[in-house]
Image (cartoon, rainbow over all chains, first blue to last red; front, side, top):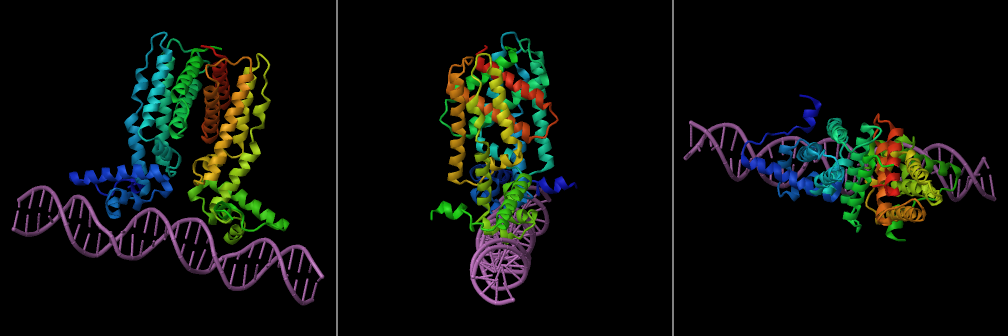
Length: 206
Length: 206
DNA sequence: TCAGGACGTGAGCTTTTGCTCAGAATAATG
DNA sequence: CATTATTCTGAGCAAAAGCTCACGTCCTGA
Protein backbone atom coordinates (compact mmCIF):
# COMPACT_ATOMS: atom_id res chain seq x y z
CA UNK A 1 0.00 0.00 0.00
CA UNK A 2 1.57 3.23 -1.12
CA UNK A 3 1.55 6.35 0.97
CA UNK A 4 -0.83 7.88 -1.54
CA UNK A 5 -3.29 5.06 -0.98
CA UNK A 6 -3.09 5.49 2.73
CA UNK A 7 -3.81 9.16 2.39
CA UNK A 8 -6.54 9.35 -0.19
CA UNK A 9 -8.14 5.95 -0.69
CA UNK A 10 -11.56 5.35 0.83
CA UNK A 11 -11.56 3.56 4.12
CA UNK A 12 -14.55 1.37 3.49
CA UNK A 13 -15.97 0.33 0.18
CA UNK A 14 -19.73 0.89 0.16
CA UNK A 15 -21.62 -2.36 -0.38
CA UNK A 16 -25.20 -1.38 0.23
CA UNK A 17 -27.16 1.35 -1.53
CA UNK A 18 -27.52 3.18 1.75
CA UNK A 19 -23.77 3.51 2.02
CA UNK A 20 -23.43 4.81 -1.50
CA UNK A 21 -25.98 7.48 -0.70
CA UNK A 22 -24.13 8.40 2.46
CA UNK A 23 -20.96 8.86 0.47
CA UNK A 24 -22.76 11.15 -1.95
CA UNK A 25 -24.26 13.14 0.89
CA UNK A 26 -20.79 13.69 2.28
CA UNK A 27 -19.49 14.98 -1.02
CA UNK A 28 -22.47 17.23 -1.60
CA UNK A 29 -22.21 18.69 1.87
CA UNK A 30 -18.46 19.11 1.50
CA UNK A 31 -18.91 21.00 -1.75
CA UNK A 32 -21.35 23.33 -0.03
CA UNK A 33 -19.23 23.84 3.05
CA UNK A 34 -15.93 24.32 1.20
CA UNK A 35 -17.56 26.78 -1.17
CA UNK A 36 -19.00 28.75 1.71
CA UNK A 37 -16.20 28.70 4.27
CA UNK A 38 -13.06 27.84 2.29
CA UNK A 39 -10.96 24.78 2.81
CA UNK A 40 -9.34 25.60 6.14
CA UNK A 41 -12.55 26.77 7.80
CA UNK A 42 -14.60 24.03 6.18
CA UNK A 43 -14.16 21.63 9.06
CA UNK A 44 -15.03 17.97 8.87
CA UNK A 45 -17.46 18.38 11.74
CA UNK A 46 -19.21 21.13 9.85
CA UNK A 47 -19.43 18.92 6.79
CA UNK A 48 -20.91 16.07 8.80
CA UNK A 49 -23.36 18.44 10.42
CA UNK A 50 -24.42 19.85 7.06
CA UNK A 51 -24.92 16.31 5.77
CA UNK A 52 -27.01 15.48 8.84
CA UNK A 53 -24.79 12.62 9.87
CA UNK A 54 -22.26 11.89 12.56
CA UNK A 55 -18.61 12.70 12.13
CA UNK A 56 -17.87 8.99 12.52
CA UNK A 57 -19.78 8.11 9.38
CA UNK A 58 -17.79 10.62 7.43
CA UNK A 59 -14.55 9.00 8.43
CA UNK A 60 -15.84 5.59 7.36
CA UNK A 61 -15.70 6.67 3.74
CA UNK A 62 -12.84 9.13 3.70
CA UNK A 63 -9.57 8.59 5.54
CA UNK A 64 -9.06 12.30 6.03
CA UNK A 65 -10.19 15.73 5.00
CA UNK A 66 -7.82 16.01 2.06
CA UNK A 67 -9.32 12.93 0.48
CA UNK A 68 -12.72 14.61 0.34
CA UNK A 69 -11.41 17.57 -1.58
CA UNK A 70 -9.40 15.24 -3.77
CA UNK A 71 -12.51 13.30 -4.72
CA UNK A 72 -14.37 16.52 -5.52
CA UNK A 73 -11.47 17.64 -7.69
CA UNK A 74 -11.21 14.35 -9.56
CA UNK A 75 -14.92 14.37 -10.23
CA UNK A 76 -14.80 17.91 -11.51
CA UNK A 77 -11.95 17.14 -13.85
CA UNK A 78 -13.57 13.93 -15.06
CA UNK A 79 -16.94 15.52 -15.62
CA UNK A 80 -16.01 18.33 -17.94
CA UNK A 81 -13.19 16.52 -19.70
CA UNK A 82 -13.37 19.31 -22.27
CA UNK A 83 -14.93 16.95 -24.75
CA UNK A 84 -15.90 19.77 -27.02
CA UNK A 85 -12.44 20.91 -27.97
CA UNK A 86 -11.85 17.91 -30.18
CA UNK A 87 -14.89 18.67 -32.29
CA UNK A 88 -13.91 22.16 -33.35
CA UNK A 89 -15.23 23.54 -36.60
CA UNK A 90 -12.33 23.41 -39.04
CA UNK A 91 -13.94 24.87 -42.17
CA UNK A 92 -12.47 28.12 -43.48
CA UNK A 93 -14.10 31.26 -42.12
CA UNK A 94 -15.28 29.47 -39.00
CA UNK A 95 -12.53 30.61 -36.68
CA UNK A 96 -14.72 32.95 -34.71
CA UNK A 97 -17.27 30.21 -34.06
CA UNK A 98 -14.52 27.84 -33.04
CA UNK A 99 -13.16 30.31 -30.48
CA UNK A 100 -16.68 30.99 -29.29
CA UNK A 101 -17.21 27.33 -28.59
CA UNK A 102 -13.94 27.19 -26.66
CA UNK A 103 -15.10 30.05 -24.47
CA UNK A 104 -18.51 28.45 -24.00
CA UNK A 105 -16.80 25.25 -22.96
CA UNK A 106 -14.83 27.08 -20.33
CA UNK A 107 -17.88 28.87 -19.00
CA UNK A 108 -19.91 25.67 -18.83
CA UNK A 109 -17.09 23.98 -17.04
CA UNK A 110 -17.11 26.64 -14.38
CA UNK A 111 -20.81 27.16 -14.06
CA UNK A 112 -21.76 24.51 -11.50
CA UNK A 113 -19.95 26.08 -8.60
CA UNK A 114 -17.32 28.66 -9.36
CA UNK A 115 -16.68 29.39 -5.73
CA UNK A 116 -15.92 25.77 -5.02
CA UNK A 117 -13.70 25.58 -8.05
CA UNK A 118 -11.73 28.55 -6.86
CA UNK A 119 -11.16 26.86 -3.54
CA UNK A 120 -10.26 23.56 -5.09
CA UNK A 121 -7.68 25.17 -7.30
CA UNK A 122 -6.27 27.72 -4.94
CA UNK A 123 -6.56 26.31 -1.47
CA UNK A 124 -6.06 22.66 -2.26
CA UNK A 125 -3.53 21.02 0.03
CA UNK A 126 -0.25 20.37 -1.68
CA UNK A 127 -0.55 16.74 -2.64
CA UNK A 128 1.91 15.87 -5.35
CA UNK A 129 -0.43 13.25 -6.80
CA UNK A 130 -3.22 15.73 -7.26
CA UNK A 131 -1.05 18.52 -8.53
CA UNK A 132 0.32 16.12 -11.09
CA UNK A 133 -3.12 14.97 -12.15
CA UNK A 134 -4.33 18.52 -12.60
CA UNK A 135 -1.20 19.46 -14.43
CA UNK A 136 -1.53 16.49 -16.79
CA UNK A 137 -5.09 17.54 -17.43
CA UNK A 138 -4.02 21.08 -18.17
CA UNK A 139 -1.25 20.17 -20.58
CA UNK A 140 -3.53 17.65 -22.27
CA UNK A 141 -6.03 20.39 -22.93
CA UNK A 142 -3.36 22.71 -24.26
CA UNK A 143 -2.16 19.96 -26.62
CA UNK A 144 -5.73 19.30 -27.72
CA UNK A 145 -6.25 22.96 -28.58
CA UNK A 146 -2.84 23.11 -30.20
CA UNK A 147 -3.75 20.26 -32.54
CA UNK A 148 -7.08 21.83 -33.39
CA UNK A 149 -5.37 25.13 -34.18
CA UNK A 150 -2.80 23.35 -36.29
CA UNK A 151 -5.53 21.89 -38.45
CA UNK A 152 -7.59 25.04 -38.80
CA UNK A 153 -6.99 26.81 -42.12
CA UNK A 154 -7.54 30.33 -40.75
CA UNK A 155 -4.92 30.18 -38.03
CA UNK A 156 -1.68 32.04 -38.61
CA UNK A 157 0.63 32.35 -35.62
CA UNK A 158 4.40 32.16 -35.32
CA UNK A 159 4.41 29.38 -32.74
CA UNK A 160 1.52 26.99 -32.23
CA UNK A 161 2.64 25.77 -28.80
CA UNK A 162 2.97 29.25 -27.43
CA UNK A 163 -0.31 30.31 -29.03
CA UNK A 164 -2.19 27.35 -27.57
CA UNK A 165 -0.77 28.07 -24.14
CA UNK A 166 -1.72 31.71 -24.38
CA UNK A 167 -5.21 31.07 -25.74
CA UNK A 168 -6.12 28.39 -23.22
CA UNK A 169 -4.66 30.42 -20.39
CA UNK A 170 -6.41 33.61 -21.35
CA UNK A 171 -9.77 31.91 -21.80
CA UNK A 172 -9.57 29.95 -18.59
CA UNK A 173 -8.32 32.81 -16.46
CA UNK A 174 -10.81 35.34 -17.76
CA UNK A 175 -13.68 32.91 -17.41
CA UNK A 176 -12.52 32.04 -13.96
CA UNK A 177 -12.37 35.68 -12.98
CA UNK A 178 -15.72 36.37 -14.56
CA UNK A 179 -17.42 33.66 -12.55
CA UNK A 180 -15.63 34.21 -9.28
CA UNK A 181 -16.10 37.93 -8.84
CA UNK A 182 -19.73 38.98 -8.55
CA UNK A 183 -19.14 42.19 -10.46
CA UNK A 184 -21.85 44.21 -12.17
CA UNK A 185 -19.92 44.16 -15.45
CA UNK A 186 -21.65 43.44 -18.71
CA UNK A 187 -20.69 39.81 -18.88
CA UNK A 188 -21.86 39.28 -22.44
CA UNK A 189 -19.98 42.26 -23.79
CA UNK A 190 -16.83 41.08 -22.13
CA UNK A 191 -17.32 37.62 -23.56
CA UNK A 192 -17.76 39.05 -27.04
CA UNK A 193 -14.63 41.12 -26.75
CA UNK A 194 -12.66 38.20 -25.41
CA UNK A 195 -13.68 36.14 -28.42
CA UNK A 196 -12.81 39.02 -30.72
CA UNK A 197 -9.39 39.47 -29.18
CA UNK A 198 -8.45 35.82 -29.43
CA UNK A 199 -9.90 35.38 -32.90
CA UNK A 200 -7.98 38.37 -34.19
CA UNK A 201 -4.81 37.07 -32.66
CA UNK A 202 -5.16 33.59 -34.13
CA UNK A 203 -6.07 34.94 -37.54
CA UNK A 204 -2.74 36.69 -37.57
CA UNK A 205 -4.01 40.25 -38.08
CA UNK A 206 -1.19 42.58 -37.32
CA UNK B 1 -10.43 52.36 19.51
CA UNK B 2 -12.26 50.72 16.66
CA UNK B 3 -12.48 47.00 16.24
CA UNK B 4 -10.24 47.30 13.21
CA UNK B 5 -7.56 48.96 15.33
CA UNK B 6 -7.78 46.26 17.92
CA UNK B 7 -7.35 43.64 15.26
CA UNK B 8 -4.61 45.03 13.08
CA UNK B 9 -2.74 47.79 14.87
CA UNK B 10 0.69 47.00 16.27
CA UNK B 11 0.83 46.21 19.92
CA UNK B 12 3.97 48.09 20.73
CA UNK B 13 5.51 50.98 18.91
CA UNK B 14 9.22 50.29 18.35
CA UNK B 15 11.36 52.89 20.08
CA UNK B 16 14.84 51.50 19.70
CA UNK B 17 16.58 50.56 16.46
CA UNK B 18 16.77 46.99 17.65
CA UNK B 19 13.01 46.83 17.83
CA UNK B 20 12.57 48.21 14.36
CA UNK B 21 14.91 45.56 13.05
CA UNK B 22 12.97 42.88 14.89
CA UNK B 23 9.79 44.07 13.25
CA UNK B 24 11.39 43.87 9.84
CA UNK B 25 12.74 40.41 10.57
CA UNK B 26 9.23 39.29 11.42
CA UNK B 27 7.84 40.60 8.15
CA UNK B 28 10.63 39.12 6.09
CA UNK B 29 10.25 35.75 7.74
CA UNK B 30 6.47 35.89 7.38
CA UNK B 31 6.78 36.60 3.67
CA UNK B 32 9.01 33.58 3.31
CA UNK B 33 6.86 31.29 5.39
CA UNK B 34 3.54 32.35 3.86
CA UNK B 35 4.97 31.97 0.39
CA UNK B 36 6.25 28.52 1.16
CA UNK B 37 3.44 27.05 3.25
CA UNK B 38 0.40 29.17 2.48
CA UNK B 39 -1.45 31.27 5.02
CA UNK B 40 -3.14 28.54 7.05
CA UNK B 41 -0.03 26.38 7.35
CA UNK B 42 2.23 29.36 7.85
CA UNK B 43 2.00 29.26 11.61
CA UNK B 44 3.16 32.05 13.85
CA UNK B 45 5.57 29.70 15.58
CA UNK B 46 7.09 28.81 12.24
CA UNK B 47 7.47 32.47 11.41
CA UNK B 48 9.16 33.17 14.73
CA UNK B 49 11.44 30.19 14.23
CA UNK B 50 12.36 31.31 10.73
CA UNK B 51 13.14 34.77 12.07
CA UNK B 52 15.31 33.25 14.82
CA UNK B 53 13.32 34.82 17.60
CA UNK B 54 10.86 33.76 20.23
CA UNK B 55 7.16 33.62 19.55
CA UNK B 56 6.69 36.16 22.32
CA UNK B 57 8.65 38.81 20.47
CA UNK B 58 6.47 38.34 17.45
CA UNK B 59 3.37 39.09 19.46
CA UNK B 60 4.90 42.25 20.83
CA UNK B 61 4.70 43.84 17.41
CA UNK B 62 1.66 42.23 15.90
CA UNK B 63 -1.57 41.62 17.81
CA UNK B 64 -2.35 38.55 15.75
CA UNK B 65 -1.49 36.59 12.67
CA UNK B 66 -3.88 38.48 10.38
CA UNK B 67 -2.12 41.75 11.17
CA UNK B 68 1.13 40.38 9.78
CA UNK B 69 -0.44 39.51 6.44
CA UNK B 70 -2.25 42.84 6.42
CA UNK B 71 1.01 44.71 6.83
CA UNK B 72 2.60 42.72 4.01
CA UNK B 73 -0.35 43.50 1.78
CA UNK B 74 -0.35 47.20 2.52
CA UNK B 75 3.33 47.41 1.82
CA UNK B 76 2.94 45.59 -1.46
CA UNK B 77 0.14 47.82 -2.64
CA UNK B 78 1.97 50.96 -1.57
CA UNK B 79 5.22 49.94 -3.23
CA UNK B 80 4.08 49.22 -6.75
CA UNK B 81 1.28 51.73 -7.04
CA UNK B 82 1.41 51.15 -10.80
CA UNK B 83 2.97 54.53 -11.33
CA UNK B 84 3.94 53.71 -14.89
CA UNK B 85 0.49 53.38 -16.38
CA UNK B 86 -0.12 57.11 -16.31
CA UNK B 87 2.91 57.84 -18.45
CA UNK B 88 1.94 55.79 -21.47
CA UNK B 89 3.25 56.74 -24.89
CA UNK B 90 0.36 58.40 -26.73
CA UNK B 91 2.00 59.18 -30.08
CA UNK B 92 0.52 57.47 -33.15
CA UNK B 93 2.14 54.15 -34.02
CA UNK B 94 3.30 53.60 -30.48
CA UNK B 95 0.54 51.28 -29.38
CA UNK B 96 2.71 48.22 -29.27
CA UNK B 97 5.26 49.95 -27.04
CA UNK B 98 2.49 51.16 -24.77
CA UNK B 99 1.14 47.66 -24.33
CA UNK B 100 4.64 46.37 -23.81
CA UNK B 101 5.17 48.79 -20.96
CA UNK B 102 1.88 47.70 -19.39
CA UNK B 103 3.04 44.10 -19.44
CA UNK B 104 6.44 45.07 -18.06
CA UNK B 105 4.71 46.91 -15.25
CA UNK B 106 2.71 43.85 -14.35
CA UNK B 107 5.76 41.62 -14.41
CA UNK B 108 7.76 44.00 -12.26
CA UNK B 109 4.96 44.23 -9.79
CA UNK B 110 4.90 40.50 -9.41
CA UNK B 111 8.59 39.82 -9.48
CA UNK B 112 9.47 40.19 -5.82
CA UNK B 113 7.48 37.22 -4.68
CA UNK B 114 4.68 35.98 -6.90
CA UNK B 115 3.88 33.08 -4.63
CA UNK B 116 3.40 35.40 -1.70
CA UNK B 117 1.23 37.69 -3.78
CA UNK B 118 -0.99 34.79 -4.72
CA UNK B 119 -1.44 33.91 -1.08
CA UNK B 120 -2.05 37.46 -0.04
CA UNK B 121 -4.77 37.89 -2.62
CA UNK B 122 -6.39 34.50 -2.47
CA UNK B 123 -5.99 33.25 1.06
CA UNK B 124 -6.17 36.52 2.88
CA UNK B 125 -8.57 36.44 5.81
CA UNK B 126 -11.80 38.21 5.05
CA UNK B 127 -11.20 41.64 6.46
CA UNK B 128 -13.57 44.07 4.84
CA UNK B 129 -11.07 46.92 5.19
CA UNK B 130 -8.41 45.09 3.27
CA UNK B 131 -10.70 43.67 0.63
CA UNK B 132 -12.01 47.15 0.00
CA UNK B 133 -8.53 48.61 -0.26
CA UNK B 134 -7.46 46.00 -2.78
CA UNK B 135 -10.64 46.43 -4.76
CA UNK B 136 -10.24 50.18 -4.88
CA UNK B 137 -6.72 49.66 -6.08
CA UNK B 138 -7.89 47.31 -8.82
CA UNK B 139 -10.66 49.51 -10.17
CA UNK B 140 -8.37 52.52 -9.99
CA UNK B 141 -5.91 50.75 -12.23
CA UNK B 142 -8.62 49.78 -14.69
CA UNK B 143 -9.80 53.38 -14.84
CA UNK B 144 -6.23 54.58 -15.32
CA UNK B 145 -5.75 52.23 -18.27
CA UNK B 146 -9.16 53.16 -19.64
CA UNK B 147 -8.23 56.82 -19.70
CA UNK B 148 -4.91 56.10 -21.33
CA UNK B 149 -6.63 54.02 -24.01
CA UNK B 150 -9.20 56.73 -24.56
CA UNK B 151 -6.45 59.24 -25.34
CA UNK B 152 -4.40 56.98 -27.57
CA UNK B 153 -4.98 57.66 -31.28
CA UNK B 154 -4.43 54.05 -32.41
CA UNK B 155 -7.07 52.48 -30.17
CA UNK B 156 -10.32 51.42 -31.81
CA UNK B 157 -12.63 49.33 -29.68
CA UNK B 158 -16.43 49.29 -29.32
CA UNK B 159 -16.43 49.87 -25.56
CA UNK B 160 -13.53 51.41 -23.67
CA UNK B 161 -14.66 50.22 -20.24
CA UNK B 162 -15.01 46.64 -21.34
CA UNK B 163 -11.73 46.79 -23.24
CA UNK B 164 -9.85 48.20 -20.25
CA UNK B 165 -11.28 45.51 -18.01
CA UNK B 166 -10.33 42.82 -20.50
CA UNK B 167 -6.84 44.14 -21.13
CA UNK B 168 -5.94 44.68 -17.50
CA UNK B 169 -7.42 41.31 -16.56
CA UNK B 170 -5.66 39.42 -19.30
CA UNK B 171 -2.32 41.01 -18.59
CA UNK B 172 -2.52 40.53 -14.86
CA UNK B 173 -3.79 36.98 -15.00
CA UNK B 174 -1.30 35.82 -17.58
CA UNK B 175 1.57 37.48 -15.77
CA UNK B 176 0.40 36.02 -12.54
CA UNK B 177 0.24 32.57 -14.08
CA UNK B 178 3.60 33.00 -15.74
CA UNK B 179 5.29 33.85 -12.45
CA UNK B 180 3.46 31.37 -10.29
CA UNK B 181 3.95 28.21 -12.28
CA UNK B 182 7.56 27.19 -12.67
CA UNK B 183 7.02 25.86 -16.17
CA UNK B 184 9.73 25.38 -18.75
CA UNK B 185 7.82 27.46 -21.26
CA UNK B 186 9.59 30.05 -23.36
CA UNK B 187 8.62 32.99 -21.20
CA UNK B 188 9.80 35.65 -23.62
CA UNK B 189 7.95 34.18 -26.56
CA UNK B 190 4.78 34.05 -24.55
CA UNK B 191 5.27 37.64 -23.49
CA UNK B 192 5.73 38.70 -27.10
CA UNK B 193 2.60 36.91 -28.19
CA UNK B 194 0.61 38.34 -25.31
CA UNK B 195 1.64 41.82 -26.37
CA UNK B 196 0.79 41.02 -29.98
CA UNK B 197 -2.64 39.71 -29.08
CA UNK B 198 -3.59 42.72 -26.99
CA UNK B 199 -2.12 45.22 -29.40
CA UNK B 200 -4.03 43.70 -32.29
CA UNK B 201 -7.21 43.78 -30.31
CA UNK B 202 -6.85 47.40 -29.28
CA UNK B 203 -5.93 48.45 -32.77
CA UNK B 204 -9.26 47.13 -33.92
CA UNK B 205 -7.97 44.62 -36.48
CA UNK B 206 -10.78 42.27 -37.32
C1' DT C 1 -36.02 -15.78 12.71
C1' DC C 2 -31.60 -15.00 13.78
C1' DA C 3 -26.61 -14.73 13.19
C1' DG C 4 -23.22 -12.00 11.31
C1' DG C 5 -21.79 -8.45 8.59
C1' DA C 6 -22.52 -3.62 7.10
C1' DC C 7 -23.54 0.81 8.54
C1' DG C 8 -24.23 4.79 11.79
C1' DT C 9 -23.26 7.30 16.20
C1' DG C 10 -21.00 10.87 19.03
C1' DA C 11 -18.31 11.57 23.21
C1' DG C 12 -13.92 12.54 23.62
C1' DC C 13 -8.77 11.72 22.63
C1' DT C 14 -4.80 13.86 20.34
C1' DT C 15 -2.59 17.19 17.90
C1' DT C 16 -2.11 21.59 16.30
C1' DT C 17 -1.95 26.45 16.73
C1' DG C 18 -2.84 31.11 18.09
C1' DC C 19 -1.51 33.52 21.77
C1' DT C 20 -0.18 34.90 27.04
C1' DC C 21 2.65 36.01 30.84
C1' DA C 22 6.11 36.13 34.32
C1' DG C 23 10.36 37.04 34.30
C1' DA C 24 15.35 37.40 32.17
C1' DA C 25 18.32 40.18 29.23
C1' DT C 26 19.58 44.45 27.19
C1' DA C 27 19.65 49.40 26.52
C1' DA C 28 18.91 54.26 27.94
C1' DT C 29 19.24 57.64 31.81
C1' DG C 30 21.17 60.19 35.68
C1' DC D 1 26.87 52.11 38.99
C1' DA D 2 22.02 52.15 40.01
C1' DT D 3 17.56 52.64 38.24
C1' DT D 4 14.15 52.51 35.01
C1' DA D 5 12.40 51.50 30.47
C1' DT D 6 12.48 48.65 26.64
C1' DT D 7 13.02 44.37 24.44
C1' DC D 8 13.29 39.42 24.35
C1' DT D 9 12.30 34.64 25.95
C1' DG D 10 9.79 30.18 25.76
C1' DA D 11 7.05 27.08 28.55
C1' DG D 12 2.59 26.41 28.42
C1' DC D 13 -2.65 27.66 28.28
C1' DA D 14 -7.08 27.52 25.80
C1' DA D 15 -9.50 26.75 21.79
C1' DA D 16 -10.14 24.48 17.66
C1' DA D 17 -9.97 20.81 14.58
C1' DG D 18 -8.83 16.20 12.84
C1' DC D 19 -9.82 11.86 13.85
C1' DT D 20 -10.81 7.21 16.77
C1' DC D 21 -13.35 3.63 18.80
C1' DA D 22 -16.58 1.11 21.42
C1' DC D 23 -21.08 0.38 20.87
C1' DG D 24 -25.86 0.64 18.85
C1' DT D 25 -28.85 -0.04 14.75
C1' DC D 26 -30.04 -1.85 10.27
C1' DC D 27 -29.78 -5.13 6.52
C1' DT D 28 -29.04 -9.56 4.19
C1' DG D 29 -29.06 -14.38 3.47
C1' DA D 30 -29.97 -18.86 4.96
